[in-house]
Image (cartoon, rainbow, N blue to C red; front, side, top):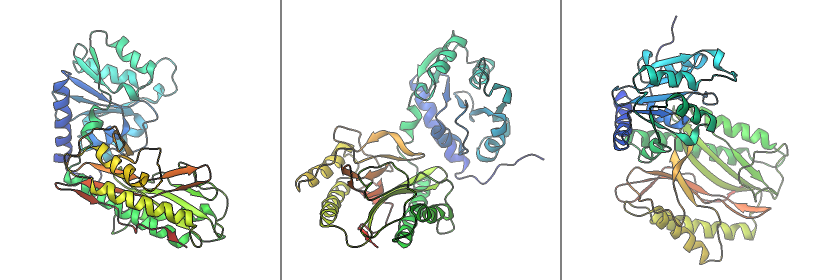
Length: 389
């Protein structure tokens, strides 16, 4: 028996539309083939979400073919057949003998394919930032007649503006995030192990809501007193205690798309300091959201936040957000003071207002939002408060 194509997150026309934009960029750069190795860009162009990017694999987009060709490890090929919108003959499996081989690896069959398909003497785009230096050199050495063009983040920038279909999936992810934040308020209690609380939160992120399960578990960061001055740390083996503060960051995931959300919890009455920081940051959040509109810049949004909190004596060292979607961070636009990226409808961002003030004290709050034709749509809807347990 053979594996069949599974339910598709998006219709074929959506992937063809995305590929057309990629080919338009290829034409602008005068390249005949684009080698896509970034796992999130592969998801964007094909629907593939399996975990296999830790070994060589690549999607080859040709100007002369409607469908791209996906070349990957043999044991992962059935997942590609199941996930991808392309026909089965566009999935090429390379043998296991290339895994752990010091002389040849999975990039060799990708280069062989470029040669066999007539691209050896053409312009070839490569995402150099996602390739090991030795692998990038292999492309140059084995394709001496080709003109190698660095196409780092070319597809990633295309992803910045979402389709309406993508926005709907992000709404689904945001609803899961909201449910997980509320579940956290139910399970965080004195004497409960942090690990047990996180297990319940993770369960909500996986079970999902409204008949839409989470399709992947994104990293959960939970920092309780006295570790609230850090940001990207996992739960501990300890238990929650009366008087503790807990900072939580999570994100529901649907078909690779994430919707980040952060909230702060207090077991018992929050301290005066925590209340003050919350009030200041909440005002900054409102100011930032009010600044979101087409034609404004990332800088405008960030500076609206920074100016608001600085007037009340608080500063935030880190950026206050970033482009958001497949794989959580889309490494393009940042909500920071010097980023002049212009906002356009259907761009989505994680407005991330975590503020790590001292080694043992910080505060978190965030929203995932979409730029609309006239302003902003906040996709996450959990109450903007300190959750008092």
